[in-house]
Length: 61
Image (cartoon, rainbow, N blue to C red; front, side, top):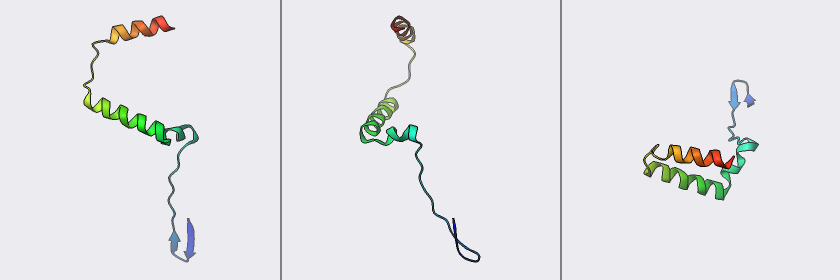
């Protein structure tokens, strides 16, 4: 913020990306995320395979 003259202020805006989120804006990550979001909007949520997935995850530990 800068005061140009009494009563007149110049306010500059900025877009800030935290260091730990910068990778999300890399072309490959942005493309992967866009594909994942598109898939998730076209694929209905289901818990039909929950037990199978949890069992597989437990075996990988």
